[in-house]
Length: 441
View 1 (cartoon, rainbow, N blue to C red):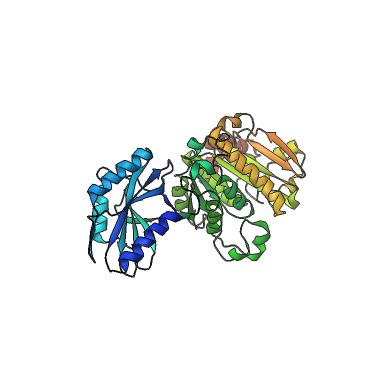
View 2 (cartoon, rainbow, N blue to C red):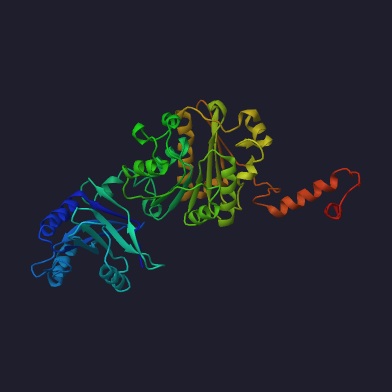
């Protein structure tokens, strides 16, 4: 089965369905239409055309049968005009109040069609109150699932024109098949999500468990009206208001408490972005990304908005987050060698809040590097670390993978630890246990 991730329906189509609903619901009869459109590579279904029930359709208070001979004729005519059109599914009117839920008959019919010649088929249901919902069947568990939809106040077939200004700059078709997870939607993450969302990436998974609060407002993509709302929903709305053809999924979870759930989510993505500002969370992401072999980009700002950094990681090939940063004490405490190389005192290289303009500059760098990781990952052979120093200085560097990194080079870490222990002066043997003596050997 092919499952829809999102449905786009134009406002003109909604009005057409509601007109049909008002007429037949007033008579207490079921009704329906077929709908056609396109399936985009990220499994976004775009509805562009409808086929009426036809002159010989049969309607009763509990059933509806379309005039299929008429429908086939109209489908052939539409596909002759628009060869890319595909029969996506059908709309049913349930002429009563209450939940817009498929009946057992709807479910059985949908399952039969999806297991037959149209594995992508979906249904749209409308009740007497005009509530509209789309439904699909989960291919694994064979249960009904609601498909999120968005109503477009745009000209029909808007995608080509919408992306026309960037189609020559990015690899649109390749990006449409990519999925990116953004962990953390605070000051930096909200900017990253907004700008990655308008690049043509097919699917974004937004992960955060916080709501927008008043102190966040001055440094976030949300507005005054958004205070108290989940940051995930705020960022989703921001993306979809600019590019409805991107699938935006939200996960409101505490990643430190739901690590298995986080790993399941990240396993479905092609790129991970760590934007929480928490070394503890980044350390967790680092472990998961290494286990799953998922490319990852980390970003953060420094004390007093003195600058920020971007670290790109190709797991088990380049320096991981633990290679570049010490994780034991303060957030984003940079390794002494890194500090020395870039001439910034180590006490200044700690995660700290800053002006939104400075945070946004670093966030845009993260988005840019993330886009490069999806399209031209070979850049990482030349540099994997960007250091932004306020004002307006950007340095590129190649941080080598540490041979004694406990995260990405465990055998090397064990060897280095053993050598260090052997070099240490012999301690008094009083009260030394068997295991401590054995370890020293």
